[in-house]
Image (cartoon, rainbow, N blue to C red; front, top):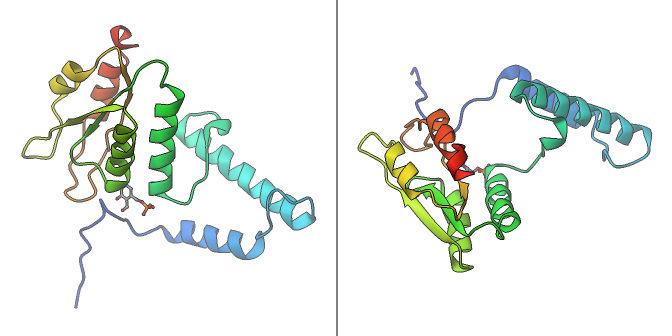
Length: 172
Ligand SMILES: Cc1ncc(COP(=O)(O)O)c(C=O)c1O
């Protein structure tokens, strides 16, 4: 029987080359990159190269790349970290009603701590309304967290347009 996989918004099959690279690294360069012995130093070199490659692809500084265990840890770290770091500037966050639980639970935890959160609605195609986003921005807004592609229905949010609105000088 021929199988057709249609859940790529949720999880996509890893490229063979990527899986091979992970396998090679985990079996040949398994040292602790903080250790001073040869295997550790080799592991550190591999990590440094990976960090530089990823930074180059993303057009960012290698020091801005952090390796985490996955999406839930990353979302918690980014959302709670940003909210705490910017709490003196304001206490308002914006996200959408259709975020993954790892985002929704993180902002709900912040709500319990006293932050105020706006949940943008989506239309029948699962897409946010940019006018609503602009209306909800206030001088108190310190973080806007919008998923690019929804993991359940695959709707794609207008991220570049949203970023342009958020970075208008009047909101900075
Ligand atoms: C959009 C989205 N965010 C976050 C996660 C959580 O990722 P992880 O399972 O790596 O913690 C998932 C998992 O499917 C996801 O689809």
